[in-house]
Image (tube, rainbow, N blue to C red; front, side, top):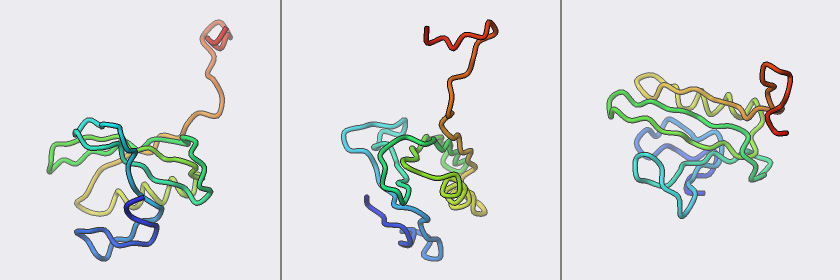
Length: 109
């Protein structure tokens, strides 16, 4: 993790990271950098959600992984990424069940 929870944003010193933040080595996101990750306090490495961000100034969109995050931690990440004049973002929690198709089957059969 490159930025521990509570550390200041490199360009905005009044903005603090709510969770540990870093990237996954050996991966590549849409912007050519490694995939960004927020790590929940449990330390679990299970994907619990994804954050989709839009930076209108840079004309950039990106997905960031949420690992081991509670719903409250997901809300904290959304608030962190939604400060004025910054990203627009949507937090997408991982579904806890497999949705059924119209026939009532899970599609996993």
